[in-house]
Length: 398
Ligand SMILES: Cc1ncc(COP(=O)(O)O)c(C=O)c1O
Image (cartoon, protein in one colour):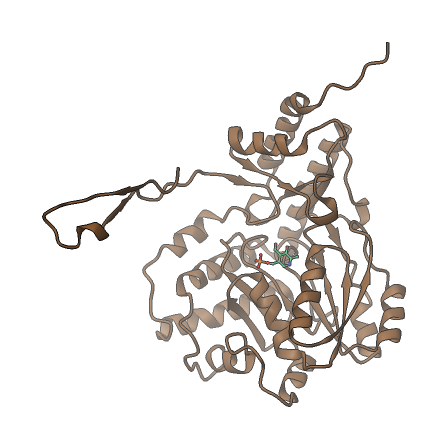
């Protein structure tokens, strides 16, 4: 048990009844091969445990600049407004909408999984006129489908998920930014499960707004939400009639802290940013091309190993995400019992399906620090040796 609670009652101390004796924290070492979080790099964990410094300390201010520059590199963008939101990926997701949506704006969301629906929910909360186009969970949109919807709905923003963690699909991005420019709308992209692990070229793809998280391809614990906004989105923000309806996520205020003024906005989670700085440094040190190739090689080894056992992938290979693989649970297998076994007996986390894919797929993450051949072999070996115990008795023909 992590928190063992015991109460002490000392008759001699007046306020002794307020004492609580709780065992020090103790957590198991898990191998996180699910949809996230992924294990953090030990170098990042070391950075997180450094003594905090002030959030306006000149050394911290210098580190902020490094984080911003390294984020631009990871995303392949020159966007001035690039910073880690204090919050998880959902905070950065909300920031993209909070800053650019004005009541009545049409926001078109291309939904092909669970996180597309979160964008729909959030855009509605900012009083957008939300339009939705949908694809089955396991497919991606074609340019033609997107252009037809742009023509029909004439949105101010097209929002979509690059790497759909609920389905394992990687949306091909070539040409979508051009379509958005042609139809005069901003392109907003969720890169939560792609940053650091899957090729991303925000400027080349003409992406105007993007966000991500710290806990997947960047090998950092959850807690920061990288955010970036390009010049066209900045212009929309500058022209808005009312205040951004969310004080904490207002980029015009945040930029006074992250930009050249360095004016206090909120107390930055300094240690999280120590970790983020190290995570991004490690990524840059490996090199984006190498990191992307590593993710692909390890994912391919996983795919071919599972397929050799007769286990099917949910997504066609050309759309498959290297960071997150969705695997069809064989019909005669109790999928939940197997993942519980992996967790309880081997300390390995593998995810289950969400929404319409609940009970139908497993989700296996090989992200950041965890994308390595040893983890692939270990998992394949467990599938080979232990999955058979979880096959229900199939009726044998007489
Ligand atoms: C594609 C996608 N978008 C958004 C989120 C939300 O991020 P967070 O859970 O860090 O708030 C997630 C979380 O896994 C995700 O996978």
